[in-house]
Image 1 (cartoon, one colour):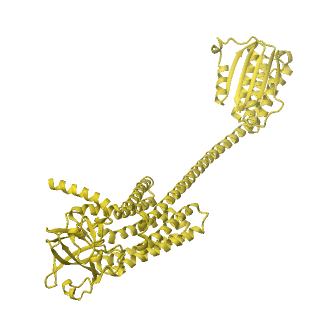
Image 2: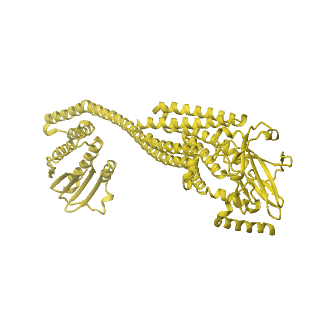
Length: 636
């Protein structure tokens, strides 16, 4: 426990010293760097000799033929044609102190295997025991221990990971500062990783959003986009999380899985775009372009896997990746030109801007990889090639969301229009059904009224005529029954004419109703002690009034006039007709009026009037004020 606390204390002190003492990371000078002079970590770049050898040959057999050169042949990243070879570093270390000392040898990034030899007394390499630190990044470090006043020449046989990011930066790190050294390596790229994590968070939100849309609507385009965002997000997250780590997982991600996830993500993106833009029907050229891209990426992933696992030819493997990326950029450029020529398509316009941003920043990212030695001098995140690619992805995502919003709004409008059209069609069908029923009813009414007029009317007229002839012949001796027959025939004939009038669709107008009321009222009170006056508007609007409404209003007026004649004991009655939004008919007599308390006890006549007006949507009111006032109101 005490030893662990001491280590933590020394680590904190070393971090503080690293922040304020530049000498802690100075390059050790001379042909024999003294490891006792290493305070935290030191570069030994000026004390190293290098050469390359074939990976298939034996180290000890080839050693006599090694031709070492001072320093490094490649100051920046290792060229692709050297990645398949093995790098041999030769350096001499000494310990001028009075006690044994040790350091960890760290050659740089990315070396998947490190084998240390020491030159013996016979100047022949002797294999050293592999001693690694007890940390996750143990693959990239080897322990070197020197006795007091000891000097040893070391040979490091290094195997590159299959990536274009390999560098030669040999350093010696004190064991007590090892964790601080690794933390400092990662801290130097903290801003780059932070940008990646933010974008990964946005992509995770898009994964959830797209998958939720797929679950709700079973729309495959959202499922494809969720896979695209997931693969791209995992690629960026693992790249940020494992970057500048010396673990087997980091080597595998850096050398192989990054490109595989990117390629598979792009396949799902193209499948998504085919459905999102409805390319099969709307843009056949783009549909075939994306099909070509899907086939191209699939073939490139197979070739990439073949060269990675079954050969040591990194040049071919890297060429597959670069050619694929170049062809993808050409595809994006073709799409940009295509969509630019169809500027009226607003959805295509959003995708155009997104792809343009992705194209520009992808080109910048690729140039940053090719000219790393120039770009690395830029400040902060601008020295990272992945930053420009992530920036292009972010802008493409923004324009995609804008396009998705536009498409959803357009889809909602189309769905609303479709629903309204369907609703209108259903209403039209219902109206046509009602119209057909109404026409059938009208035809039947007219047939019945014609039959009544022709058959019953002529019969009743004959009965009335015969009774009049009989009465004239008998003169003073006319029986009462003949008088009743004549009167009944006349009454039935009037009622039948009223029924025929109400059933005839040719009378379905407001003007016809008012004319009929006027004619009937004047005729009804003729030869009676009551004088009838009718007041109608000067102009009557041309409005249609259905037969059932005409008939019910007329019957209500007829019942009211009959009550006035029988019970009012008045001498005058007036009918006032007004028309605005309602048809209002006020019938007023100067008789004795009605007893409002006893009104409910008498007859069904008033109840029938109220029921008839209610059936046609109107109202009925009666009051006693210097006579009886009856008001019929019907909304027009």
